[in-house]
Structure formats: structure tokens, C-alpha cells
Image (cartoon, rainbow, N blue to C red; front, side, top):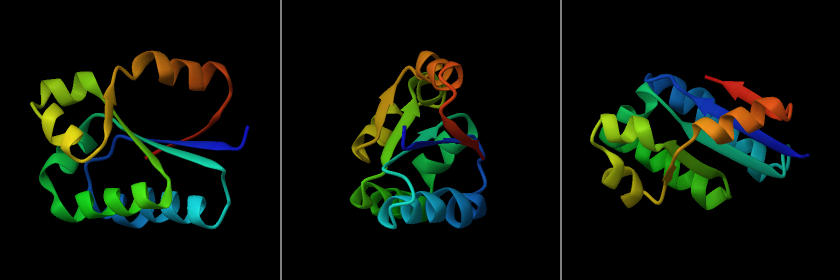
Length: 111
């Protein structure tokens, strides 16, 4: 399977700009991976809801064809479900999908 999953749990904006989105966008637009998913989890959830620069990078990633998903439990705990949805982020339960990624031996980067 030609798919990369990026589990983004870091709440640092510098890491978001210089690793998560730099790599995700380039991986998709340069054809390094056919499918690229970024999974927002934990502290990154709050950063996405509050940081306009990160929100812009998400838009660029989406335009490039990167799938952006977020853990609904994290978003609910932080009160940002509607904000994430307004950014066209798929907000859903991610525990089971992450478990399947791991059990299936899919490519996963955790940042």
C-alpha cells in the first residue's frame, strides 16, 4: 500500500510548519506517497484551533490532496469540535483506525 499516516501529537507550531506540513505536502505533491493522512491528536488539536498560521498550512495540505483527520475525543475535551469541522477536518473516533494502522503494519510517522 502506497500510503503514509502521520500521527501528529505535538503542540509545537514550529514542528507543525517545519515537519508535519512540509513533509505531508511535499510527499503528496511530489508523488512520494499516493495517499497521505495527517491525524491530529492530543496537544496538536488545541494548536490547530488557535493558530491561524497552522490553519493556513492545513488548507494548503488539503488543496494538495492530503487527508486531515482529528480525534473526536481530544477535540471534545478541548471544546474545539466545531472549529475543526469549520476547517474541513474530518473529526471522528480515531482509536480503532489507529489500531488498524498499527496491526496492518502500515507506514506511520509520529510527531
